[in-house]
Length: 261
Ligand code: 1GP
Picture 1: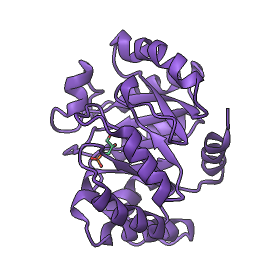
Picture 2 (picture 1 turned 180 degrees about the vertical axis):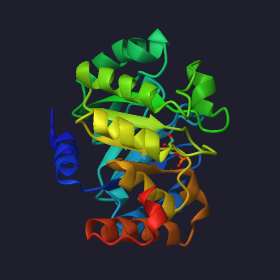
Picture 3 (picture 1 turned 90 degrees about the vertical axis):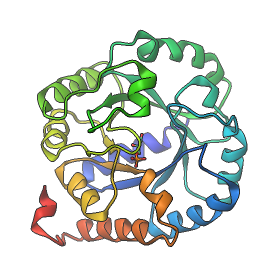
C-alpha cells in the first residue's frame, strides 16, 4: 500500500497547512465539462480531486477516472457511495465508515464486500470516519443512508463521535453536511472537533464562497471539499479565489475579521 496521501495529510495538519479538494459528481460530469474544470483546478492550486457520490445513476466511474487521470496530474480520490463505485484507475479511496449513524451496513457491511475488490488494486486506502451533520434540509446522503445527522448545534456530540473514530484507528474524520447543504458546519463544531482529535479533519457540504472556506479553515478544518458551487463557476473565479484565500491564510493575512468565525 502506498502511504503517500495520508502522510501528506498528517504532515499538513501538523504544520497548519490547509488543503482543498474538488468533488466531481459522476452524474454531472461529461468529458467536455471536466476538461475545463480540471485545468482550472490545477491552476487554482487544488490539492486533490474526489470522484463519487451517495447515489449515482450512471455507471461510468471507470471511464471518468481514466479521463481525469489522463487530463490532470492531481491525485484522484474515490468518494464511493457503494462498492460499485470502486475503480483501480484512481489513486486512493476514502474508505468511509458512517460513524454518525447506526446503520451497520454503512459502518462495516459494505466494507466487507469491498475488501476483496480493493485488495486486488493498488489504491491507497484512507480509513475515514464519515460524520453527517444536519444541514438545513434532508440531503440525498441522509435519505440514502437511512441515518440521522448529528444536530447542527451539538458540537460535543460531534466531538465524542470523532474521538471514538480516532480511537478505533480511523485516519481521517470527514464532517459533511451533504451535497448542496443549505447550512455549512458551524465554526464552533469545527473548533471543538478539531481540538478533540489529532488526525486530519475534512469539512464539506454547502461551501459556496471563499469567505466561507476561510471561516471553515480558520475554525480548524484541514481540508475543505467543494462540489456543487463549482457547477455554476464556469469562469473559474470561485475556485481561484479559494486558492488565493488559502495562500493568504498561509501568509498570515486575514482579509476580514469575521473570517475568524
Ligand atoms: C458533499 O462535501 C461534499 O459530500 C461537497 O458538498 O456539493 O455542497 O459542495 P457540496
